Image 1 (cartoon, rainbow, N blue to C red):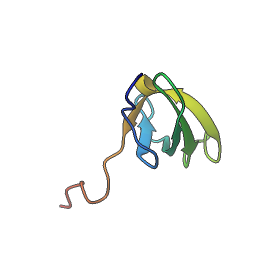
Image 2: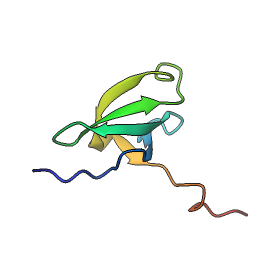
Image 3: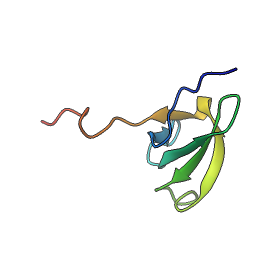
Image 4: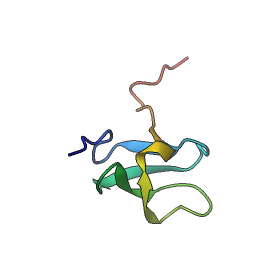
Length: 67
């Protein structure tokens, strides 16, 4: 059994297009996740299933340094 890297409600973005952001809805299986997209011209308002190797975790607001 594969251990999920991301958890439900984690904020994620595409590795190649960081402006496309969304939220993990559920762990699918074998490294795939269902993601509800909040931004991006072609993804906004849609839910897709993606592989864990094409997304990365977004830093939370509390983890960002404020300058």
